[in-house]
Picture 1 (cartoon, one colour):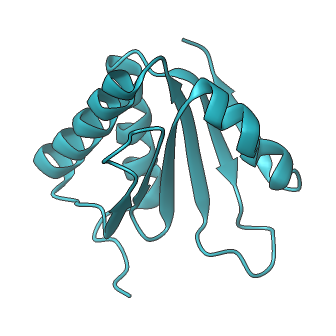
Picture 2 (cartoon, one colour; picture 1 turned 90 degrees about the horizontal axis):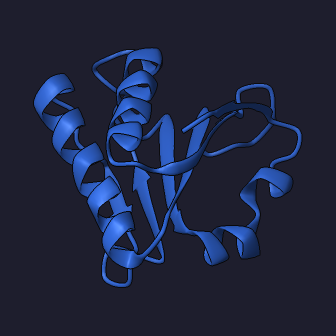
Length: 121
C-alpha cells in the first residue's frame, strides 16, 4: 500500500473544504492514531440529504483532491446506491452517509475512543 504523496493535514483540510462546498452536513473528523490496530489514521464522516446529494459530495471531493492535490482515492465503495459512500485515501477514509444510514451505523460511537472534532455547517 502506497503512502500519500501529500501530508494528511493537507488532504484532510481539502476534503473538509470540499464537503463544506457541497453543503455536506454534520462533518466530523475522528483521529484514530492513538487507537491500536486501526486501518487508517483518520475518518472523515459527513451526511447528505439524499442519494443525489451524497453522490454530489463524493464527486466534489474526488474532483477537488484530484485537481488540487493530485490525489485519487485508493478505493471507493457504495457509489451505486449512494446511501453510504466510502472513499479510501489510505491514511484518511471518508464516509459519506444519508442521515438514517449514518444514525444506524453510528461510527462515532463505534470508534468512541477516537479524538473527535466536529465542524459546523
